[in-house]
Length: 337
Image: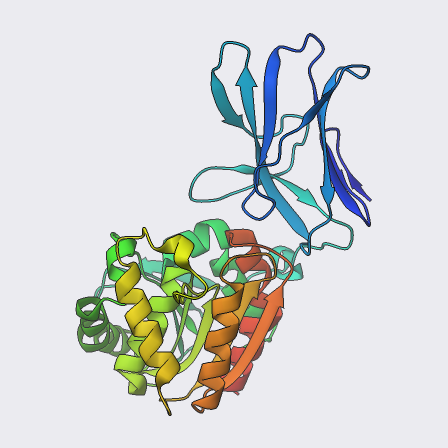
């Protein structure tokens, strides 16, 4: 059983506790994307706030605590009794490992020799192995993928272990991701007519590339592949934001919601497509699960060689990190035998 002073998980439930000897707080709530915002109750005899919820279909639980003070002031903090943290674009969260969770082995494997540099042909960071390589993995939200999901370590460790052929890892930044990654045709045209040909020439890798992305980055990679299929050898799409009215009305306030819905609708209605090997992963407890299942089924019918994997996590960087192996590994082995 994973147990820390503030939280633990057993076969049936997840439990949280927060000491409050003098009942200085008037309320405590859990803040968790898939468990919601349930309120703690105060156990006067134990002088602590407590919460017990049914165990979800997740191997890890990222969460914070919202405290309401007697004067009405509210603050959201990490669980000070739980030292384990998970990184993310909006700051750290506390994280609880449920029974059976293991971190990927490649985190501790020795990396292959290689060098990082800024690409001359595009605004991107590139890792190239010491051995010659003519293959490219192109990653949307690349700097965040490396910072939070350690895709650079994954690439170097996987090459060193002989799991995949040597390849160049290209990390594309997203200065305005809500605009550029929301099925934007200007972005797709620039990526496919300028950025990718220039990168291929600079890296000496004329073969089609494998494109990867998460959330909106996954949507944008599929959008680019539909626009210029000859440039892509495969797709690795994690928790794609494949919004549909029937599943995602809660996202309707997003500024580019309708543009995404229109593109996704066109893909779903297509009778055929520029099929390539494609692996889609999605967390078993996240809102995007239904639209990812729908997209995987549609692409499979259109001739894509689709692998769809549900990992026991949510919409977060560590969940995406943990799905890189075996799922990205298997895709790269298939595309680059």
